[in-house]
Image (cartoon, rainbow, N blue to C red; front, side, top):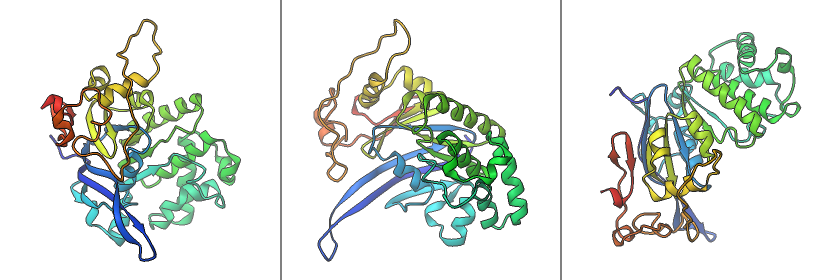
Length: 322
């Protein structure tokens, strides 16, 4: 097996809970708690889970917007957690992000050509004129007109703004793009257009994606492999067809059961979870899912299961498969 493009090993992110005038730390919110996975070159890894499971935090960790509490993030063998300043800025050209809210991620005071050209000019890769010319080419590639370059973000629809965000992400010719709920704020018809655009760009620019979403259908359409997160933990990861056709973890089966059935005469196991999601500030001991799991055993309450390969290419963190 060749070296993965991205390899995340035992990443943890704890946010301190501080109280009083002296900001005394009384606990931690465990947003990510020992997460490991990899992304191969040219691969799309989908990340799914309920709101608050740590998906977006994981994306921001890979972008080095947030620093990890523990663990390592290797990009082409280079440990990103050890880089700072100019070295990190140089390496960051290779991975870019598409945000959930395209309007909030675009500078309202800048014209579209300025937004798309700015990464090239700021990183010293081109002159202002060269960067502007390149911006026009990228705009055309994502389905915008050249005349759109003189307009401001508020003059576009949500789908058009997301196309601007995609063009900006492509400006530095990255190898990996982290897409955080990139289509969740768009109408269904526009979602399909953006997803098809992303798939075309993947082939054309030889991109790898980490696609974060709570929409199981969207993730299946775009991804090669899928990882399922719960309460800051990766509970299952594997080939998308294996995972969707035969989910192993009780939480994954519950997620699948909650999605609507669109095919006639299609039947699915009915799974209704009891109770609320525990607080990441006070997660349960043992398996994080045992408080809601219909198949929980005594060992689940005491020992946290490791993420192990149950079948080739399909790993699960569950005592049922040990």
